[in-house]
Image (tube, rainbow, N blue to C red; front, side):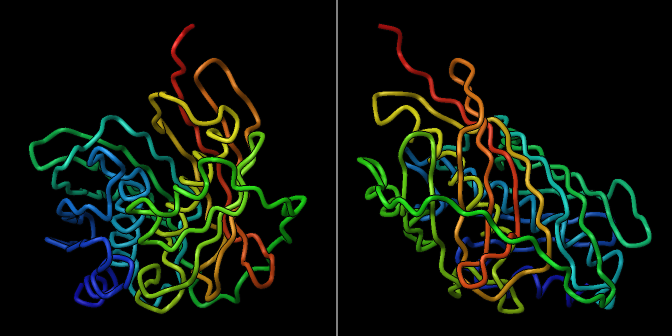
Length: 284
């Protein structure tokens, strides 16, 4: 258990967020995250990437505690995050519970809630153990057309608290498409020195949201992420990442954006997913 607790708390990304592991067994973990401005959107709302990251860390912790360190390396092969409410300037915690254990995988449910008991996100994950198997052959990203126009919003997004803490660069944000790069830094790394899965999912979340904003343009709108799905295709990689987002469906105030996350050096896809984003445009 000590090794798993160290994996949680010794990661640069977890330290940057302020995550601590309060309790851990083979079947359940409880994580604590105090409020911090660097984890918040404007208005002190917890960034959706932070809530998703707690889901990632909790599911990984339960899996590692249950299967043992020798079962690694590990990766979150699939996860679903449903955002239920906002945490505004509040401390939050995450409780991860084992649903089922297989030979090389664990299914884990995570509830992220405020310390007052309000559930803000529900996460289900399947974490896969590779038992020392060689890294998989990853597909080559198709990338995009290379346009570099961050639009009116892009220059400001990377300066906001969470984006600045991650070192995000909004390279393109026009006509329902977005491209964001994230460096491999200590503040984004796991305990082994690779890109932390929580940071990867946060990048995916942000890229999908920015693709939606690239569809509407800025305005006095209300926006939020109701849901995201993500699949991480391999164990953490040791390189900067670039994420490509594009809106594939719009239905009223709902935007579905497909996101592909690839290594900035080799162009191999390390994660993919879909972000459902909501932008409420006032009626004229």
